[in-house]
Length: 620
Image (cartoon, rainbow, N blue to C red; front, side, top):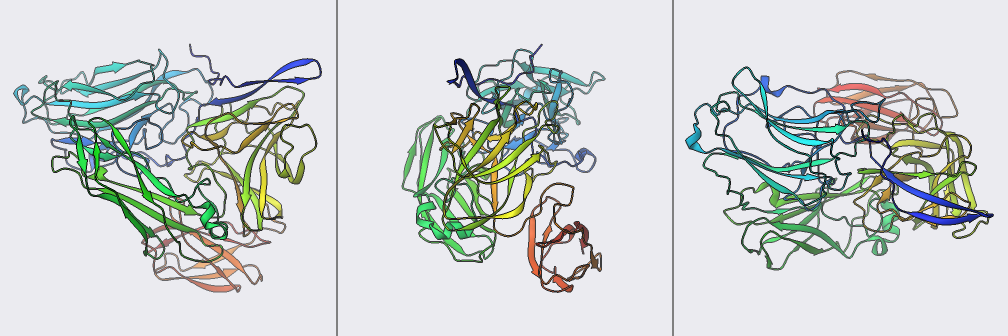
């Protein structure tokens, strides 16, 4: 039976309080929630399309978090480029203990062991083949990757669908808990029991569903005729690493803050990685990147690499010059740059799709060190009679207004919703000393909360705007003593390699964090914001907005139940992405929606004093 206690880091700093020797603990645990998996119903795509034919190939190179519905049935696994180590090509399928909705299969017991995720191919017609066609299925698997390693009770299994009444037959399984590089498996499909018109194969993992420290990654699946057990060669050159962004330290900051010190904030170069999966050395001569400004479509920069020889089975880091300049734009605009990396692979290359990899640099209204994905959770074990504090160091290049804090909380079993904490903003912390900190603002009596959407940060809106000068400041949370509010899980982005800028305080002394990764707390700057709480956080009553016609084609007519002279609005698509925003300056107005693609949308109005519930409309 697995003990439901997350893996404890050996990061015990010996401190003293009076004559008692105490141990301050930083810990990491499972993420127990995948915010990137969209909470939508499973679609049985088998009923809508014809059978697939050979060859079948999948390297999970798509940018969606769910499996390609042209090849797979269901959506339980997580397609990503952050959970694996030394990938064969960009993208893997991750099997964990989280359902298709991104939540634990069992939210009550942290020790339940059961079959968890599955990945099932669509129907493949093998009825015209015989054993003489020598069909083989090959794939790569990896235990743990950047997550927690499976234990002896956890396993990865492969099933084939039989044409007889026996249904699914287990063909292969692995319970190897050793964290290791990807390993290739070759499985023959020669038995006539599998050579039928409704053949399918299915990967399944067995996991401790309440803990999610049982991670398997699968990649590079190939099913074809004319193969044998020695056919392990992969003739493919591919990008593997998501491109680094334009920033040196932050992963995101408001564009106005970037422009105020662009040469300081901007990295000196971009990096990615190209892997040669051939068994012979390969030379690539044509590779590079092109950068563009998403809003205008204009080119920003480009660079080409120098002729490069990559040895067999190895990866090479590629480095390109960064932008020399970036465009000026609106003060509060969200700005997105896109870096498109390309390479020209040999004619014999198996896949051309992984010859291109795209990364985006987003400038929005927050400061971030994380990439938006949590691979683990961070928490403190507290001394019972003392509070616990976490603070993240940030800097501003020009004065700005602090409006709130976005936090991604890792789910716990049971949930931490009953625990309390405070958000604290510091001008300075007394590092290495028990002297009083320079507190600028504090918001008390808060509780962790969770959002079941792709935009998974919970936003805590400050009760008043907090003006901040240029320079360094700190923001974080305090967990009170004697309250049962210890061990609050904070999302941890383990892919960050630079400093995490984090400090913790469990004995009235601030100590630098020794945990690798970025804690997922994001200060929000600039214009007024709306908090995530269901309750109205605004100083006046909730207002209403009338919109018509609905459905609409080109224009939405607006009538607001307020006489405020300036109201902002945002339009979001069904994925939660902002597709249009602006402001209206009167109680009655019109908003043009002609540029939106047909579909369902939400429109949200907000102002300094009033809150308007989001409303759904249909664009024809």
